[in-house]
Image (cartoon, rainbow, N blue to C red; front, side, top):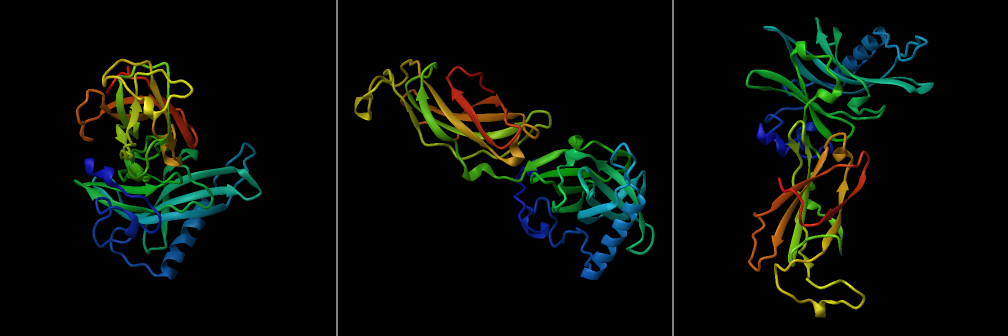
Length: 322
């Protein structure tokens, strides 16, 4: 499904912020055109909380039952078991002991309707800290069918999109096994920063431009490319005090001992837990000809950031290209 790469950032309601590729036309967050009044929604939320309390979730070795539940979001959906379909709601919850914040868990349930819209039973889909929820996370999601298969897409606390199969036989999966569909952060308006030219390299004289994106090599998922940087000149003269533009010279393509250092910004949804590689695209103008921006060479570096910040990259000119 290559078009899934076009998902947009989430900043509000699903019906406004999701690309039409994801959100079926003329659908609301319940994705089935079912209009719910505010009172109806509250009845459902209350019933979900009651059912979760009855579930008696135990979070510590002493067996203390934690009845506090925050409903972070839900969406109308269908589940399937064999050839049998059932209606209900996918529910995102944060369950905790208000007196001991460390005693908490995160769960996704299917609230299976057994009668009226406010009666039903809960089936656990997934649980664990890997869901990335907090007590005040707001989860947006919607249900859709693709070639006869039923799925729910949702945003987690790191603002990326995940996918749940609504086939009951595939539930109770660890959060890390949920496919990461696309980053919600579009790098298209950003570019690499903090360039410097230094030694310990093998670049040919000329100019170089760089862009970046992140890649999950296990799921083969990538972000969008950033903008390309301005051309960075490499000259065949040794850098020393007093070297200025006035003294640039030498032949394009001449071997130098120079390299280029720069920083790649890493956002919350791009840390190493989601993307293990950062890919760098290089446009080389080191043969005296004009190189179109559609012609680039790509190499990969390990994403070393487990938290937000910058990755330091040094391009020496002898990297193995993808």
